[in-house]
Length: 234
Image 1 (cartoon, one colour):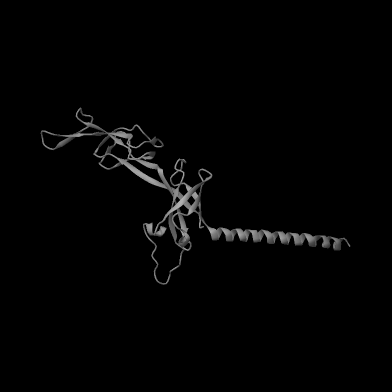
Image 2 (cartoon, one colour):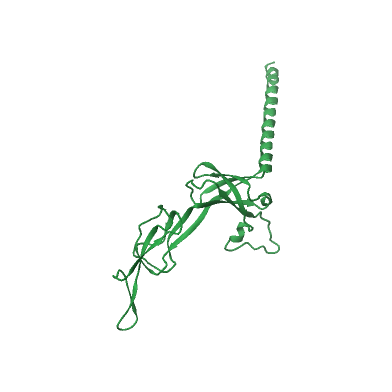
């Protein structure tokens, strides 16, 4: 008697659980269809920026480094002072390099862009050649996002489409716009591109870089930081 009563009570619960499962599955399927139809999402994205090398125009020795890694700098602000030596003739012939001579020139080396110093490649007292990098500066006013999209969906991406960029380091979403679709897959830029020999070919879906412009240039972003991208197709 009790078993029969319990069995009768279980049936409505089983029906309710089944109905709830079907509703959740339908909602999940509808959401998946909606996302795949109207958006392209990828977590294979990162912040990129222009890295500018600051170097001495002439060979010399670094006399002073008033700036260091992490400092914000303005365009043309001196980042280093280089002692340009004079080459004097010796009595026996040849030349001799002198530093800190009264006739030497102390040349300030300015930053070509406004940004933040991200690397120092020399120290005070180091001898540098013409064009040798002393500092690396990232132009914080020219940052963008590179998102790698599967080639099977890249045909749906167009310049001008709205983009939501979630930056992990900031834990916030920034608005953006598709700027350009780079006409080359990521594997093209490998040092050793993959070569497919006859008989062992395995098709691999290629990734195509998409450059996304950010609208907010005042946010303190980190070059190379991870991001999640959601491209609006409508």
